[in-house]
Length: 176
Length: 200
Image (tube, rainbow over all chains, first blue to last red; front, side, top):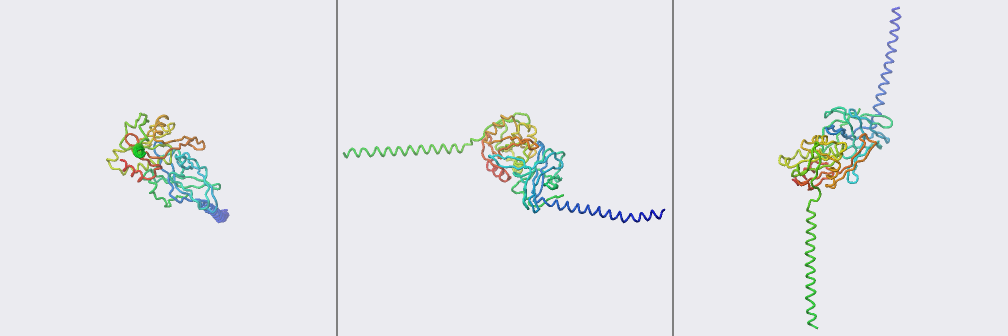
């Protein structure tokens, strides 16, 4: 009886090993696939969110996202961790006034960059659910019709925002 | 015959001399008046608003130079950017300049920004910044003094539900509230600093 049990156990070990390899392979392929999908967009300019301040329930985030695929892509914003709601907006000069309006989605041609900067396109974040510290990362979820993907926006305190001097060409992307 | 012709000449010359003299005087008065009007700061004036639930009158609190900005606290983009630019500029002023200058932020969102919040909001950029609000009438009166404008629009597709378009400009007011200088779409600390130094 003992011999039979040992024999069965010896047979099972290679079978389990094969199964384990199969599962591992699937996971690897899945990870590779996921990575390949995420490369449709990438952050090409420092992505940041201004630390929410007292007296208001809104703040803004900036950065630049590039369509790195070979096809036109549609970009939509879904959510931002730590905020109740997030939307994409643009500020435009109209009738001598600065007007803010919502962007539901933006279509980007291959290699086209969606630039978000003060006084132009930006993400608007509502009702922070916690207190943030400078340097903390806010995961912002975007989606295209085929997939969703996350970018980390760094929390920045509102200081030294001389926009004409600010050098932000450096790539500080935090791509999940 | 000869006597008649000699008596007619002086009359015409007198007429032309008088005409030129009149034209000269009129032109001098006209251009003098235009120059006088142009040199007068006709835009601006005194206004009353609310600071932390207390009445606030410009003439009671004015300084030698007063930067005035119109916006709203729930504006995520241009308002905080302009206030940050001013804050950066103020950091570079010396003690004497700081004593003679202040920034006044007026929120035109009287329905959603209460005066306490607006005061707190402005102070986040610089503890000396004054955040004001008021009734619609008070706000409209102040805004019209500076030929500025704002427009509240309902935006049901947004979470906030509304948006306020507004003039994006720093008005540099003297102690009487008259506009000495303006910067539209202020984006640079140096630009603001230069005007402060020129007008202070």
